[in-house]
Image (cartoon, rainbow, N blue to C red; front, side, top):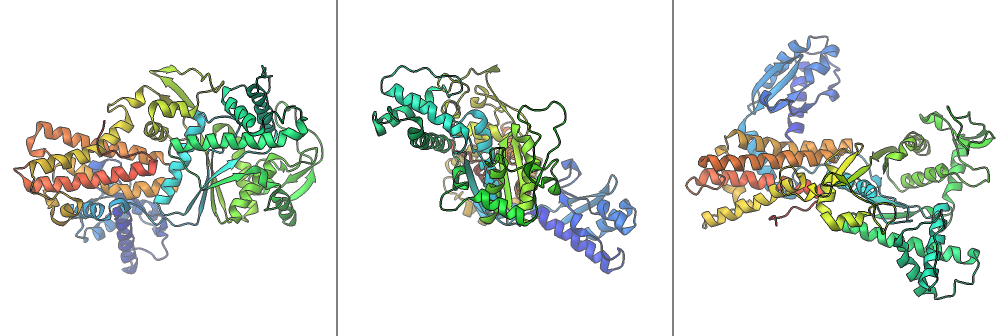
Length: 586
């Protein structure tokens, strides 16, 4: 039950009635009419912008139009007050029965409450896609958590979602990986090695070298690089991907598809990059030409030569882009276009890439490419995740000795746990730098959002346990509370606030999914949990407001129904974030 969608329909019905009666002209665009929570809850339960957005088109003063519409809305028995404020906003107060029905809907629908049927076709979300050249670090973790939560969010809103990981198993970096692993293979066979500059020095490759020694014995030692490079590369990539999958599983992240970059130019699917270039040529989107020099200082690798170029500027990019290098091999951009074209050909009409902040220059060119190859059918949204500053009690955390250059994600998981990482990674917008303090995220206090929200959910169960002890003959199950709780007993401002927040959940879920912003769910959960804790604390000072009061069975059962509904919303939101909802805190 989404009261915002319900009353948005009611406002449009009122406008259509005014049009039929001749008080408004025909042909008004009602698609811009919205119903939202008012900025100040003291102004009402809902607010609509209808008079503001229609006044110019209707050739009326917005406040005057607002008064006419408010009068029409007052005839609805579910609306107890409709008032015009400011330049023409209409604030609405709803009858208590509307919120009582929300609570019943939340109890009746359980986990399905708030879940939607968001319009739109299949979505492909690509996230993590870390090079398989080393263990995942904390920065990878932020993109991984964000992408996974966004996938959960869109699925909860009703969109079919494919979760994808792009394995960068082609190119120079995996040859460097193979040579680094080969040195560790020689080390495993007893040689003393020195890691030269340009290879990966971290100890994380020691197990790979040991695995190569177990699989091949000494047979690779006497072979030239041309013979051992390919098998060592494949072994090292597989070993690193196994480790990455283990780290992802430890933080509760899964993918439906692991797509190999190497398959773009071979394998059963043929050469997808060559197919892409043929398709672009057929559309007249490839030409031979020269690019103007970049503004400012010329980069060392810039060449003033005729190149094979994609007409990227036809689709909103700043410059046309090369598709072939000077040696005739494909550019990374050509491979990336082929990969995104493949996603679209697999059925996704909305593509989302979750990338690090250093990929900002990638956005326009790939959006142009997706528009071109899909003939405007597909849309690409690139979400950039900013850096994570890892702290302990306010001090920067030193690099990992084992990884060599960074703190691994697995080290952080082992220290603070999956829930703390996931919630705190999502408690800040993805494009803002995140300070992640290892000491603060395990504190049991209001200042630690993940603890505070999980404690709110656990309080749901502690209240039910108290009720069973205090009223042993009463059935306090969800079904029983739905059947006989008299919600008219809920009149305290704290109770009304909790009902309002429960009513907002479907809208928060829908708007967060539409904006691709899972942090909105984390903020909402903290506010909702805070409302429960606040009401609980009021009951310590005012016995008549205690949730469980055996001398007032009517109020007790109404409050139990309210807490059960609110707890269900907390559990649902935590599930979207991929965070557990404990029955009790330990």
